[in-house]
Image 1 (cartoon, helix red, strand yellow):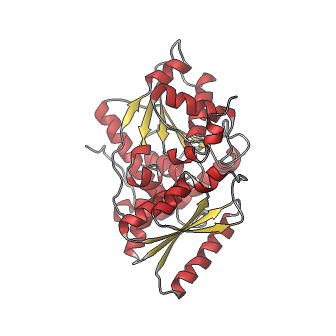
Image 2 (cartoon, one colour):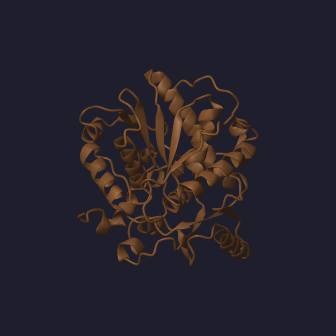
Image 3 (tube, one colour):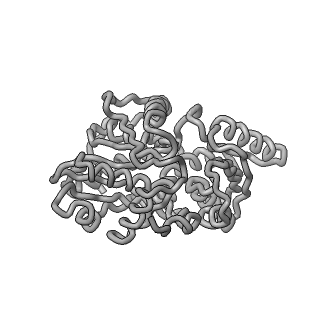
Length: 350
């Protein structure tokens, strides 16, 4: 695949990396969904299949973990520690990739969602975590990232006292956004694919939670001279809070890569149009998006991330914010295992 001419990406090429992803991921049309949403005509709809990155059921976390685990291997670690929600795609993918590298994985499960259903506690990503042999820990809070990171450091101290060599993947934005680098690479990949296809995209819809994917993609596009509009659909916090997080992480990523792209005031775009009542909580917009994706395109999107992102895109299209002749791209970041943890809600009648 040819690469477009590229301005500097800073120290991107010098960062350690393990290559486990099935890359590049495909770009596909979504004509049936477009017809279902806009029978009289409207924007063209595309999907970039980052749900098909391969390792550990795939998803966006594969790209991110290639850089985290590259740093862990370079540091000589034998154990990786990570924290996130009970049904975390990040932790599931980390555990699977650690298994391939012969590393132990410790997963700290935060109580972000008040849900005691047995499906949520034992199926989906939790089942996969256990299959790959990860060691599971609990953390009683779900909204205190600094405290979760401190608890990880305590676990890392225990690993050291037992003779292990831990590497910690921190959660809070106080640490360098190492994972975001994976989506700098995705931006380069996407632009190369569009150039080869002779196509353009007007607007990308991407989930924005930790903001690593959103931040890396936007940073990479601007560093490469692209002005494609990037809309971050909120899955963890409201649009105002998320805007501040992405803005801070763009600065952190610039420092991490020792390069500062130019950003306009309008570049950081967040919407909570489909966020609903909180992280990991089903709403009618998301339930509809899950059904439409499956029935129109045979795509599986999840209740926590991609279902809400697709629901946000659908709401914006229905509001007429994109015109016929324009092209929207849904960045599908995976998460299908969570469907098995929310099965009691996914098919619930409205």
